[in-house]
Image 1 (cartoon, rainbow, N blue to C red):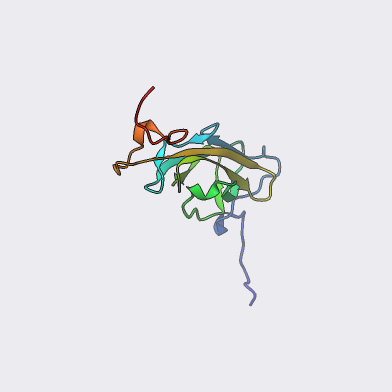
Image 2 (image 1 turned 90 degrees about the vertical axis):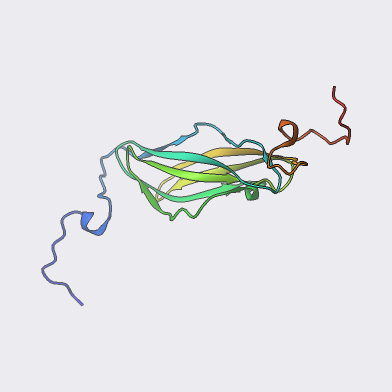
Length: 157
């Protein structure tokens, strides 16, 4: 089928961003600027929440192609369904919620990576969290966090 008389000026009619070859390459700024550290959470009990704020910087739109959690402890952290790819325009912010659900007592470290489409642009942040004991089953860590090792003794020092 051939459509006669169709005139298209630019790409806006199709929901596409116009391509500006001379524009400064778009960049992403991610907050927090360093590690995303979660409060200690009782092991196997609930989920802590944190967020990454991804801001468009520069002159052009950045298309986020993929956001994934990598590393040996990646299963302790989670992402919601993000409906990617997603356009991040200069000056706009895309908030990504990250959850931490420790399966056991101990420290957990992973990395979240944000990759742009058709570009070498990859931004990453380290995720850190600690699973603790909750012997009282009150949803809170015992003594402010997990012990280095459990001696079975309540005597202080």
